[in-house]
Length: 193
Image (spheres, helix red, strand yellow):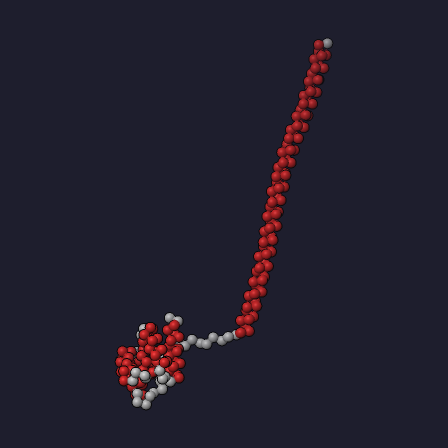
């Protein structure tokens, strides 16, 4: 009978072991399920944040594209306005034109002297041309052409301040229209230096 009790006790112990193993598995599975649900909710929260961030980014991209479209329209409007204006820019004078001393309207008593000063200036002999023009200015202080020649020579020597002063004096005095135009031209060149 002892064997019988031992067998029954063994069966009870085996049943208790199976029951405890089953309960332990249930508890373990329940704990794992809770951790899994917690991780899933964390991941869901992260995914929600990413989706919100993505939506915000898409909204900003749409706003940027709208801004670009508006700017493209403005650029097209400006290009159309420019095309309508079609302003032609006058050609810049060549270096030869800038360096050329304009034809002066010779005064009857100084025509030979003016021609000589102009010729010397064109040959690059500025000091000699300057002396002749300065002599003309001293003989007749109101002679605008002398100031014009002196100013042109100073400009060619790149003494712009002196050249501007002399050309302004020439403009204030009697000066033929063509020479006055060249004086303004040379003043303009000097102002962009």
